Amino acid sequence: MKHSISKCNRWEDHYSRRAKKERFPARSVYKLQEIQKKYNPIKKGDHVLDLGCSPGSWLLYASNLIGNKGKIVGIDLKPVSIKVPSHARIYTSDVLSIDNKLFESIGKDFNVVLSDMSPDTTGNKAVDAARSFQLCHAALDIANNLLIPGGSFVCKIFQGEDYIKFIDVVRKNFNKYRAFKPQSSRKASKEIYVISFEFKDRR
Image (cartoon, rainbow, N blue to C red; front, top):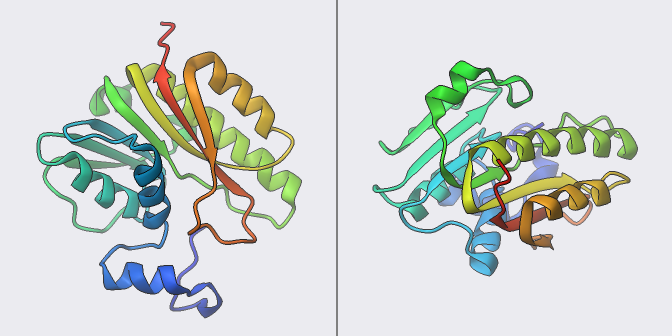
């Protein structure tokens, strides 16, 4: 669940103020920026799928990276109200239950699949980690169906008992992976990003 800075000032920090100044809807943009700087998963002209794209910071940042000759598609359960460039499309749908009609609409052959999805947190670390694992598994299933051979997958997961299980599945589908916690992640957060490269495509 994303917290409104205006209503929850305890969440406001350097990154949230910077995001407002640079006209990004959320501070999460700097996590992707750090990932991009370190691992460079997104290239100019790429086709990118952004799962859980609300409120749109990752989508805007990635759309600038790929340029007008690229394509980016965002999907989220919540409507996204920001203005996006002409090479971006947004669909309102539940990632856990995407139907064939939507798959046909968004297309396939993506170079990169991104997932910054988070569950609605309960305060119970074990429950939150399990819910995060469910979202990550759904994102990985979508990536396995829509990535081109050699494609990349960036996914946020909460560290918990299922983290190693997720890594084991990632290893089966990608030749390389790295685990990375951006500096812009809050210190108390259990989130970590798994950046996977060279999709094997076993279809």
